[in-house]
Image (cartoon, rainbow, N blue to C red; front, side):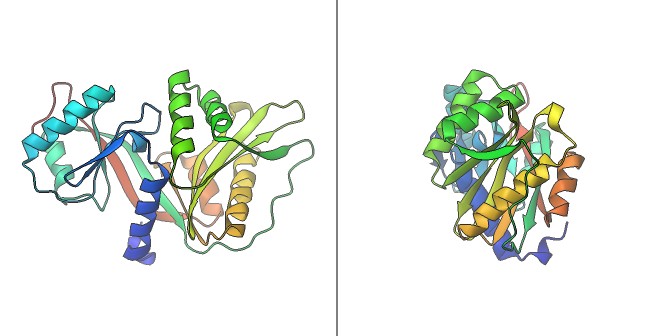
Length: 262
């Protein structure tokens, strides 16, 4: 990764856009911490983003945050990025026994162009979906329980960033792939790109991403970003071919079973 290749200003905008695009109704601000407690699958919507140093004593603030997450019925997680404040938070949590989860890469395509929409193979159609329908589709493809699908639909419907979800279907109406984008000004994020197991290795993910990026460009997007797990090699190859490159990494810290003193 070479963050300097993109510029710190752009990457901070990308981080802000990712936070805005994943905002759930269940969130609050606590002395420099953005607390989120959506009951859905996405960890970025049910974690603490420590975006400012804060002024309150650590033990008191952590106790209050832990109590709020308990009330919401969501496990306590911190999301750790290069922009986490204070800078030593990750080391502090590690020393207290907090486990590392989900090593993730933020990939950026810094210069979108007005591409040609992909020519879909005969018998396939790519169509937009409403937020509830999209959340149900991607939830079924992932095997998510009903409660997580409902939480996803709620988050999309209440998002402060415009949502655009799409599904790829065959002539029988079977869902082969789905994906969505969230555009904020000239930035667009790709989310929920998923291909049905039986339809993988056919180029559908690339076609779908090209379609989403073309649509986003027409709406004013000029820079694209996405978040992908570091060990998801097939997806990363697709995104690299589309012009994305690693920009920065983030991960989560999960509280030990008995809690952690920091």
